[in-house]
Image (cartoon, rainbow, N blue to C red; front, side, top):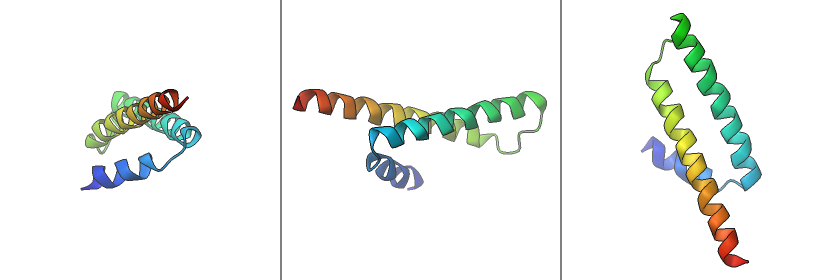
Length: 72
């Protein structure tokens, strides 16, 4: 249920907002990897969630790019 709510929120974002979201997710992913390497990672499931969120954002960016190209 959470992922569908997250997906609908992402669909409503503009391309610039999606870029900002992708940047923040990549930073979070880096921090989580760093925490895992140093043994300080508490929520290991968050790594998977962030990775999937990055994939969702990239998919939506691609869909919006293709939709804009079809309209032109």
